[in-house]
Length: 362
Image (tube, rainbow, N blue to C red; front, side, top):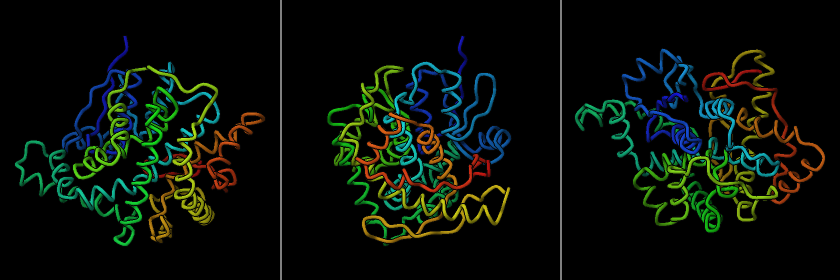
């Protein structure tokens, strides 16, 4: 008999939303446990060593951390129908969109939460940390606990002069996704992929649930809001990916957006990480290694360089480099359609392995 998993997380957590949707579609029995201050002190810190959610405890009491590693380990344990498409174009596109959701949409997610929903978010953090406290106490606790997250919005690129560019890019993304979801329930057919799972983190926990942004999504992009709702309550193990490894034309604008906005940042991050690793052989990398410039909708800003993003991209790069013959040709044709030459010609850093919240030389 299959045991029950324990998911330690919260509704306001970006990456808890990703794991929760996966568990529901995969039809794995789980109990979600609100990660208040006591849970952090008694469960998460002793088991993980640092404060982070989501965390999953397996029926065998194994502790899993990091949404991507959690999902990959559960896929290994429960092979069945998979969120990873088996065919090359769909699989690579899904992996790329996971990177986009995890590592780039964090910019609008953090911007909207802390520059449009700030007071609500501070109260929500207080309710999470101290559910039995008074509203005033919760707000004081939440304000203190949320401060690092609020500051992270600017560190990730949401400086005041970048707000209009971030919002314009996000609204165009909503329009592009709306065009796709007009005819298809998920990215690659009638079932979620790892690409859908990657996008649901920001688009549920921040953009759908936070009050200002939720109203904005439902008014401006109701088809995206309906996709979020499908992802929150998917029919377990149901549906199929499109036949013949089709990546629909309606998805190409989203891939083009990823390549035009995120790939230059990843390329410069790779250059900076290669330099850092040459100067610091063997050492784990810090979570950030300084700042670099980026461009969004013609506006120039700066943001921290996050080596972890390259570990996420490495998964897509590994898959791409494993392809040969007709499979490689099919994927190259897809990348050509999506203006993806920067990915094809990407200069990888030395191989990376995840190390807590950052990475280390593999």
